[in-house]
Image 1 (spheres, rainbow, N blue to C red):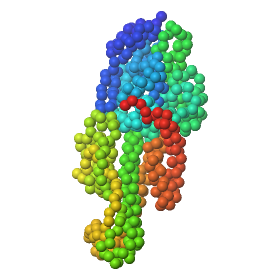
Image 2: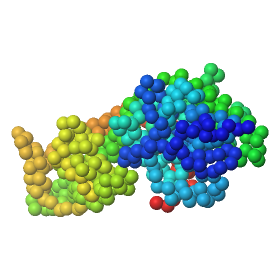
Image 3: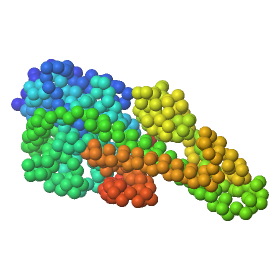
Image 4: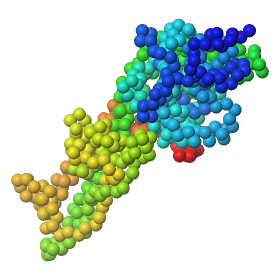
Length: 541
């Protein structure tokens, strides 16, 4: 006869019965603490003398991640089949139609990373307490825009005092029915693995849900085909664990089948927690470095790209002046007041509200950080409304690390506008152009002809352009050095830009390196673009 739950779990008072029957299902009520968009739920009291293990779960929406978290919690608590009881720390949505499920995903606007801390059950089943990090499901109806926020939320968690600073295992949650990685799954795994540094590879495992207990050949083949970087067993196969997601089903309808499913989950849970115990904790500083480098890469190259394009527009304008001077040489000699039509490149301001990120909604202000001295956009969608010096691109000496002049923060503003490059046709005499250039070159000992000054300007601009391209290339190389998967969608548009410019410079080795990276990213991009085309960017806001 099943043991009465009150005799074994009577000491757990923070629970509510949500469904009587076989099994009786209880909702656990952990202590909840919210810090900005991070949520921490704690069950029990921490014992500093006991060790702790941390597992980070990531996966596509609908893979059964919530059920897996509940299974981990029940295993840690020592719940057995004979107890005829089940605890939920994460609410599970049962018996929903696909339409209802998508509707719930659309209406749910949370992008929180949730941390579950399970204390006080050490030596029930596990010799350690358990921390489970649950990331929002990738690939839901809000698509790529929402998915990209997940990386930022993990960065917050890893940076925050009182957050998580070590991880033992990263679990990729996949359904057993997967026989190939479709566009959403390819995009998901790429997004996930691009978050981590290379030291994390032997801690990444596959957690296969809805399994019948047999070796998941199709899933393993799919992981191999997608070249997913993860822990390998002695046969050089991806390390995996199997789980059946039916713990809350009515046992009176199929007691034998459900008990066999429970035996499978308990067996695999034992294997997983043994692996967890053996896995050395990896400091997440490497992951923080990867996420920081990705963010710096995007911001730096966006700025460098605008800078290079501005230089290219100026070069075009200067060459027009050269051609005009040569073309109208006779008229100029006869008439010093002869005006030449030329293109003038200048900076203007335009309204820029910024992207609607969750942090910007919380602080109530969006915009970009701009340098008024260099007339450059240093940080789009900067979220530090209360103080410019808190921006991640303002260093400890209060200078910007992005703009051309590395200017002091006092030369920067954070407003809802940005600089844009514009051109206009102006008519100037040769004398006016000479005076303009001499004014711009004040302090030079020797006067030069207008043509000489134009040629000198071209050389200086080309040097600047090459310098900024080299800086952008270094960021790409650094990301590849430290990241477990540097071939993310984030770098694709920058690769096209850099390859074209390196071809102009005939930098053979750099072209080859960038082209090889681009060919790998193209495969990911094709999946990502198909995913977006199939509705990855749609959904209710």
